Amino acid sequence: MADPRFFHTAPPKPLAELAEIAEATLAPGTDPGRLIEDIATLEAAGAAHISFLGNRKYVPAFQASKAGACLVEPALADKAPSGMAILLCAKPRRGFARIATAFHPELAADSGIHPSAVIDPSAEIGPGCRIEAHVVIGPGVTIAAGTRIGANSVIERGVSLGENCIIGANVTLSYCLIGDRVLIAAGAVIGNTGFGYDLDPSGRVKVPHLGRVLIGDDVEIGANATVDRGSGPDTVIGRGTVIDNLVMIAHNVQIGEGCIIAAQNGIAGSARLGNYVTFAGQVGVANHAKVGDGVVAAGQTGITNDVESGAIVGGTPAMPIREWRRLVGMQRLMLKKRQVNKDNGE
Image (cartoon, rainbow, N blue to C red; front, side, top):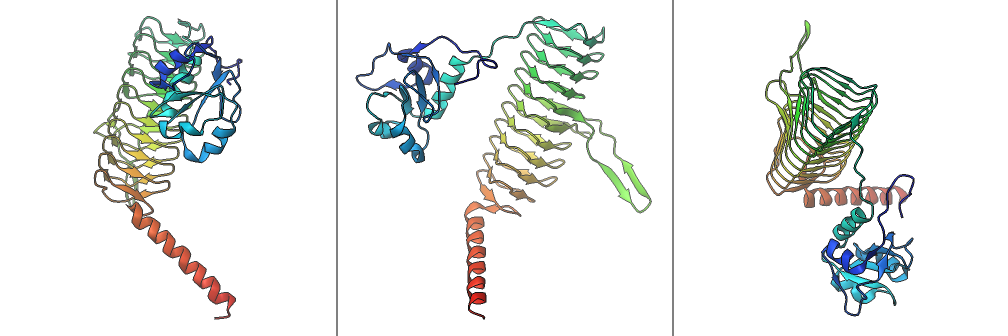
């Protein structure tokens, strides 16, 4: 139940339409014309709402829910309370997300350029773009059709933005080429110089960073994330990768397609991630480490060496997840034995 001050709500929809949106099937006996007004959680839903059951531990909440309809895996449908319309769905959470989008579509922003924006005459702005207050766009910038730039953002010289991108407020873009449908949230900094120095007892010399940041189509970068440009080779983020808030990606890093990188990750210089890598929160990757396709890293994993494709790792230094869990279990057992010995005066 979204706050109408912030979110548009579409008109009520019949269950048959919602089932089609969610790629679900109506349970036998369900009225396909029954109208649903909105989405809601199992606990908050009423007769006019649709919810979902995506985890068995919420079965009690499901059984007590007053929701008028619910997306459910077929194996759990028999636990539904009386009167609840059931939409059978192999992936209830995904189906619910699609329905939520249908009920609360993002309204298209009006195009136009705010009079306070400062745009270099050599910049090229495509049709249907929206440039908000106090945006600064430098020389040689190209912004393709339908892209939106949030207030106070700075697009520096030569940057290229593809079609239908969304750039949040207070974003800084430099030395980067960005594909289509890219979302960069508020406060992100893309293309800053990397952290590279040559050090000896006489002092330090900063290494010039003459590379770029290349961002593929359909990438999302969260609030206050930073992506440094390369020092010679480019920093690359592959198509469809999703990067959470407060993530640091250093110079020369290469990230493949379809990766998911959660908040507070730090990826050091020249590290390489394959396709479809998943990192939980606060994962750290050492410089030059190579992470293969499909790797999954648990929260706070420290990756100091190469990780082969398909591995699931945890701990610091990273190790197979089962070994890490056994190690943690052994440490707890040792602490427990130590406490018992202490209590016995040994």
